[in-house]
Image 1 (tube, rainbow, N blue to C red):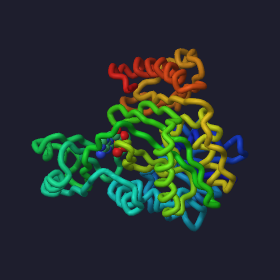
Image 2 (cartoon, helix red, strand yellow; image 1 turned 180 degrees about the horizontal axis):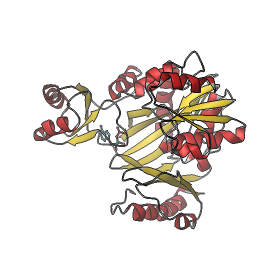
Image 3 (cartoon, rainbow, N blue to C red; image 1 turned 135 degrees about the vertical axis):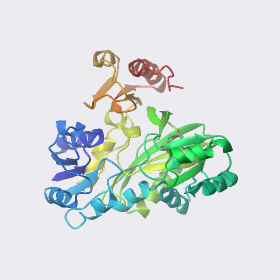
Image 4 (tube, rainbow, N blue to C red; image 1 turned 90 degrees about the vertical axis):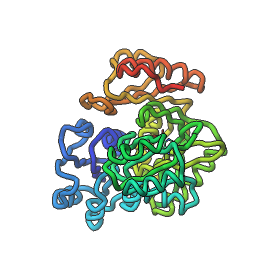
Length: 371
Ligand code: AMP
């Protein structure tokens, strides 16, 4: 069976790396051949809205998925008669619009931050009056890794924040005073079986995921998060991996956003779980049974952003697994990650501290996101 992946970034690459041992083949599609996925599978190049090129690509594969959530929904829908596409295009459509996403969550009874659509200064003022300050103004579409959002703390900042984000197609959200951020990754098979990973705790730095620790044992929150994801997966007739990020506030989970794909906060599962998120995604696509999501000890993942640390320094740490995506360095760009494993959470945290010191030194960011 050949799996077609639209987008050949590091996620596409890790999908292929997990599926090749299962006897699966991969073909990727991206705008350029100079992409992380090219190291492990052939890449067809074309624009993401070039339907003729995408149809030709689809005829060469048995099933289609994507590693990037800003692939045009119309492009994925146009391939429907040629090869099945999973996750369903509707999931992609919802995830591309922060307002649609919040509406879906709310309809399913999943708590979300107070929010309002903003298309003008007048609507922003109304939103702020109703929701209060501080808050975050975000673009509804095409935002990722903290891009396309501005924190506002006073009325005086509204006009500038609005202008910085283009003035329309925005959403204003009340600032959630969370104690921590967690995410839940789940996979749903074609037979409707669902496998949930343990909750992961995430620390962001300037809107970009910096550190994940998992599992984050919290039985009540785990049950609650599973309940929420089950509702989304079933409502969307979902196949593949889904990740939802939550704020923890008191004993409540407030959904922030969902990713209809494998997710950075699930990278720890490559070595830290019995079956990785990548393998479970390709298993679901191929109609194979899902694998165990059980954690193997305690895992900590650190992203390398902007600059890679020395491989030799990272590899000298105990229990470490190093991933270099082969990308050229650029400020704010995710270039790789490493995961440390340990038998206990305390030992994991000690190893994680050392790993984080290397990452921080490499990126020359003085403030460490480790808390
Ligand atoms: P996002 O792009 O929505 O994932 O936002 C990136 C990060 O910004 C989140 O992981 C949070 O750390 C922070 N953030 C986003 N929205 C809110 C909010 N409504 N309240 C508090 N923090 C937020």
